[in-house]
Structure formats: structure tokens, C-alpha cells
Image (cartoon, rainbow, N blue to C red):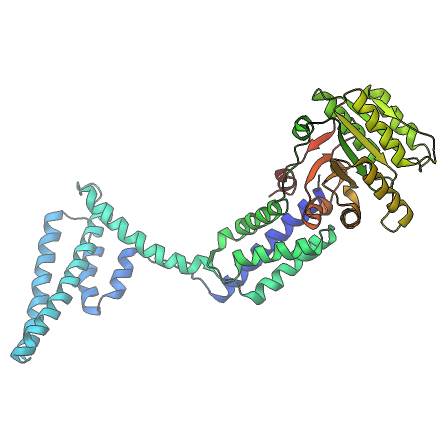
Length: 434
């Protein structure tokens, strides 16, 4: 289901992610080794004099801990001696302040020397019985340094202009797969909120795009669901009347038979009303389903008043205490004014508890427009999408509920009576590989 759109989306998401990553890398060239080891970084930040003094520690061959400490103590003394002449040249009042500042500098150098010493010991004398806490402190310093650098290198921001350019390709794919423009605008708006001018790790761009698409698509079906079985059982006065309508060839009659089978499986009695007295062989087609399912069907001759057939079916159901009446109406287009008026008459007479539009999923935008037209004419309550199993694009399934603000109740996924699947948003999401 929706294989074509799934593959197209997958390719577009990967391409957009790659473009974002490649462009940012071009703007910010990264050296082959962008992150220096912690010890080398410390040496660069220190003064030339301090570097010279610390080099022997790094370059020396492994020696005992005691000797390293002695040498460092001597170097510390030399640093102190060099600062003394400077202090003597400053006035008494300023000398105190300078001494305090100098002590701070000295303490910082001592701390850095001590850290270099510890790292040198850790890296050059691993067998010397160094305490575990020294290792942990060194690792923490390295970690903090690496985090600051890698954050700058691995994150990016996408401008509004760049987003528009990137989304145009995804927009074209959605249009090619019959996704309604209102839905595309919603997806675009949701995606921009998650991407534009937000610091994003390059490695998460594709993931964020998928998460946003998944959330947008799930939100398209944010309408109250209809639990048909529960609704029928909870109705105080029987029967529960359901009217089905759609255009010719949409799979309406077959869908009615599938619903009748599902109700029987749930221990509910059903009466069919052959109110399609307009199309040739329509009554015979519904009769065949009724015979196979073992349910009662009420019929009149061709050309009879469809509303009268519905009325008689409801009357029969009341007499037999049947749970539900399913009314099959003639297929029609919204432009066929006489047939639309006839359908309105059926609605007035039958007063259905539920009005269901049956559309052919593979017709894409046509299905969405038809659903909207019938909704405007009689006010539909729910939808069934037939032939969803052979729909490669999925535009109708993604769009129709959002446009009509009505829930998709079932998907037709095969030719057998059992091939009626209760709709869940996750079915669409999973079919699109999100």
C-alpha cells in the first residue's frame, strides 16, 4: 500500500538531509583532525615559556612518579623567582594588588602544570599504579573540551530561504501523489517550525524530517472516530440506519456487503435496502451479496422511488427487530442535480443514523473532491476508502479526512468479505515508512 509515495518520500528526505549536511560543511571547512587532544590544547594556550618547561614532561620516557613530582616542584620555584623582580618595581599599594593577581596567574599555571603532569603520568606510565580519580579528572576535562568544539562543528541552522528551496522538491512529490494542497501547506508549516532557524545536529536532520512528517500526517486524522458496532448496540430503538453513497464504480455495493458481513460476525442482524433503482443490474448485484451472506434484502422494480425502498426496508427491520438497515443508493456525481435531489429525498424519508461516503482510494484528488461535494450536499458522517490495497500513491487516504473533517472508518483491502480493515492513522504512517 502506497509503495510509490513511500519510495519517493524516502528519496526526498535523504536528499534534503544530504544537501543540508553538504552545504554546511562547505561553509565551515573542517580540518582532517578538528579536535586536538587535551594535552596539546593546553600547551598551545600556555605561554611560550610555559610550553618549553612542560615539553620535557611529555617527551621524556616513562619514569617514576616521585622524580616527576620533584622536577615539577623545581620548575615551580623557578617561576616564582622570575616574578619577584617584577613585584619589587611596583609601588607598595599596587604591589599588594599585583601580588594577588600574580598569585592567581601562578596558581592557574600550577594547576595546568599539575594537569599536564597527571595526564603524562596516565598516558606514559599506565602500569605505575596511578589512582583512578586522576584518570577520571583528566577524562572530564577532555570531555568538556571536545563537547564545546564538536557542538560547533556538528550543528547547523536552516534559513527560511534555504528551507523554501529544499521543500520545493518534497512539495512536488506530494503533489504528484495526489496530496491535497491544504494538506501540503500544513505539512510545510509543521516542518518549518521544526527546522527553520533551529540548531540541529546534522546527523539528526533526516530523523527530524521523518518525525515532523509522521506527526503532521497523524494530526490529519485528528477527528472523532466512529465505533460502528458500539453505536448500533447502544441505540435504544432499532434499527440503526446507515445510508451509503458515492459515484458509480467506487466499490460502494461491495463495501456494503463487507459491512454487512462484519455486523453479522458481531452477532448483529442486518437488512439490505436496494435503493439503487437507477443503474442496470444493481439490484441483482446486491441480491447476490445478500444470498451469500444470508441476510434479508428489500427490493422494488427498476425505476421505482428509491426513498420508498428505504422506507419499506426500515419498516421490515422494525417488524423483525433487526439491528441495522444498510441502504444502497445510486452512484452519482455532484453535478447530476436530479440524482442529488433524489438522494436528499432518501435522507429525509430514511432519516439515517449514519451517512457514509464510499470513495475509490486510487482516484486520489478526485476522491477527495467527490467526498467534499457529497459532504456539502447531504453532510457525511464518515468515509470508507475502497481499493486501498492497490493504491500506490496514497493521496486520498492522506487528504480526505483533513479536507472533510470526517473520520475514515474503514479501508477496503481486498475482494473478500473479510477484507475490510478498521482505519488507524498508524496504517498510513507505517505504509509510508515513517
